[in-house]
Length: 139
Image (cartoon, rainbow, N blue to C red; front, side, top):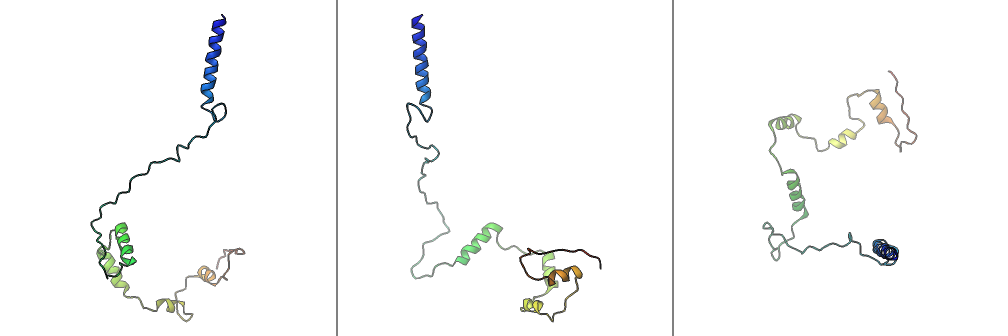
């Protein structure tokens, strides 16, 4: 009977020692590496790009506009042909006057009345809107 108690005690003690190794406190307390902070570095590989050529001596550097245009072409597919409806709308619209922004901002320019609400919005004083109020009324 004493042998059974000793065997059980040894078994319990061994299990306790083994479980204490799993925790951060106890007999086997040590600093462990963070497994998520360790990563394998991939080797550097230069992908083949056949559209690039080495710069020639004495030639100016390519401008950023070409890079910007290449980016837009890659994103949106480059310039597309206009449809007949779009061509017709542009022809009906005509060409814009170069001074159109100055003409529109001129107080002597005649515009179409858009109503009292639009007039009140345009006549509202500038501000941050902290003291703004609205009122809806019939004319």
